[in-house]
Length: 215
Image 1 (cartoon, rainbow, N blue to C red):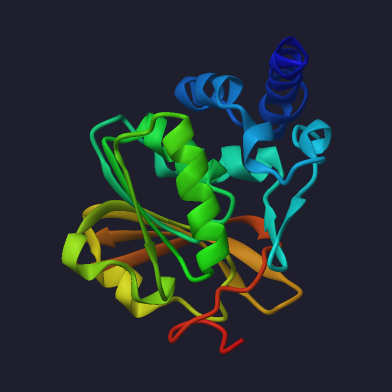
Image 2: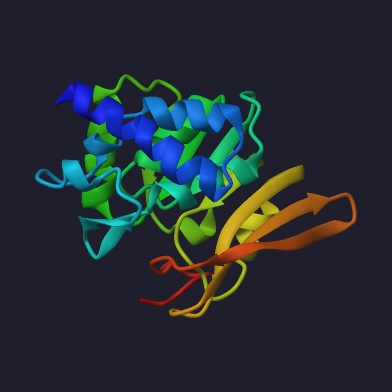
């Protein structure tokens, strides 16, 4: 079974990530190593490397591999950064960030998902990830500011607390839009304020919280 998944990861990189535009060598190497099948519910392991989202319970999903790769690449991580992730979910994106950055803080509003992710990340021997259960739209101000912030759910508007928790030169990657149509936006904090750039169209589950969706 282990060999099967190793082959599946290599195929995922070669047939999904590289053709889809993921070119960052560090991102490709990490996604070829991390056992994505460990982060999906039991019985769905064989589907975990397919080019599509997978349900993880609580009406949430683990994003398709390509969008994970593209969002991670957009952060342009070098390995020295302190990262904030909003929406721990399955913990898969968290694990990738943990391999690419110095320290990762991740917030999840659903206790069952956070607790399950914590168990998996512990079993995989991560030491540089800290998890919290709470309203991700508020960020994690006492641990900020952050070099980069990655949001794995879609907000109807740009949450101002997240922007304010960026260091100068830091980047925020977040899906913004309606329930049906969203754009993946890159926000950079500059000396004079904030600049925004649309990276692509996308579709995510809703970011629920004080500065997101109400439900």
